[in-house]
Image (cartoon, rainbow over all chains, first blue to last red; front, side, top):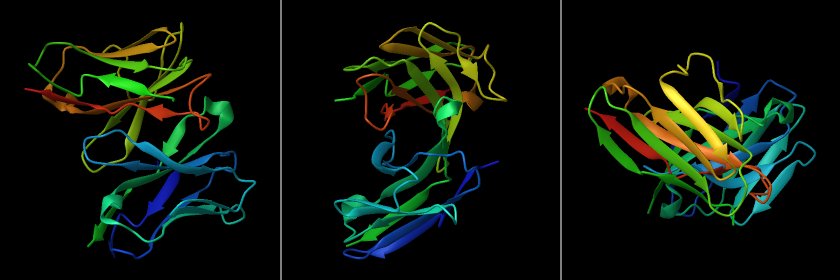
Length: 113
Length: 117
């Protein structure tokens, strides 16, 4: 049973376009929401993260939007580049649960030049 | 900072043998380490959580006698796949957290591709 639901499963975007990935959760005890980028054959790398007291966080071309009341958060990749082609995972954790991460199913992003 | 080294990156072993995977925190003390398994085009599945000096806590459905986890020091955790079979072939990834580590709490290793033939 996946505690964090992620969509879409895959997306294709043109270079310079915007990639949007959405995640939803049910457990209101989650208090940390990171996004990870994973290239084939490599471990996940933290991209950006947010806590529920903030509605938006931006780091370079990557922005997290967080809607606490709707229990949803999303990743926006602005000005998408071919090097952004990877699989992206959203995740969430609970501090009292050893900070275990619950991962979404992943979204494979392909940026066409 | 906050680097986790995982070794080996790839390993091929014969069915019935055991394989050890190492996960080291290079520049911080990893009080907690997590071990994940990932199937092709799938998400990460948490196998177990280990705290330094304590027995690992395994997730439901993970055989603790098959996947032995040792976290004897603040910089090293090992996962040993015992009596490996082809169905154990997978991508194994560790992550670590602790004082001096990433401000976000977790740093992942680069993963180990295990192929059992």
